[in-house]
Length: 265
Image (cartoon, rainbow, N blue to C red; front, side):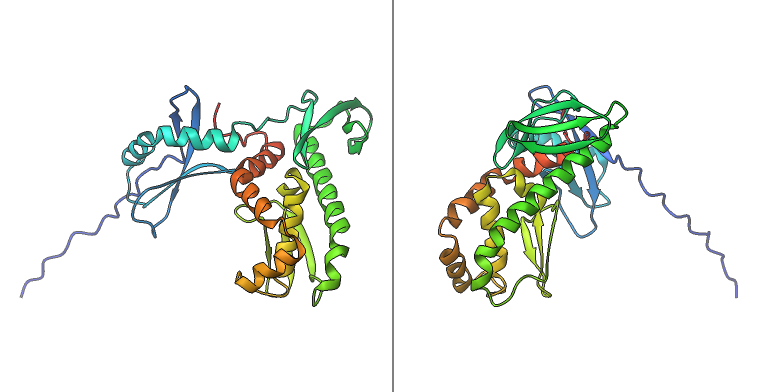
């Protein structure tokens, strides 16, 4: 009996993928499309969020196929990029004249000084800017300012609603969220999106009330919405506002915190 040795298997090298595909939009701008491979998807999916432009593809899809798909939807992509980022103004440290806050563009003043500080005043927002301050440190200071303002808003509204609730939230964390405006965990810990401080105050207050009502009804049943209606009759208008302007609001915060967040140039 003879045995024929099989040749050793040679592993097929994984195809080289482009992490970012630059695409020229119909208006001449170039947008960076980030490719994300996902073995659970069968087709190609294109999405625009405050985090930029993303195409999700099966790992076996070639870059040529992905690029053709993105180019086919260039007009749609241009519209979505304009909706999300079209009115978002990049923060230019030492130069920008306004900052978004509570639904309006507030005058921004830059003041020479020894210590970096961001504070609100009667005339708007003042940033004391040392000559040695880095771009990143200024952006972080503005983010911290937003956080303090958001906490102040929640602290002002919360006492109004607590008496009618079975208990208070275990904690309230305010930070940037990707897809949600807020959430309430099973252990009563609440999360709120920091970007809400850039929205009109009524929209922010609605989200707070929404999450507080989950302490009564941990669902979105008719009974839940009745609890929201009882405490915040204008909730539908504020929900519609966030649905219509949510992505630009989230994008504005992201662009302020990250200089490279604008996807097109």
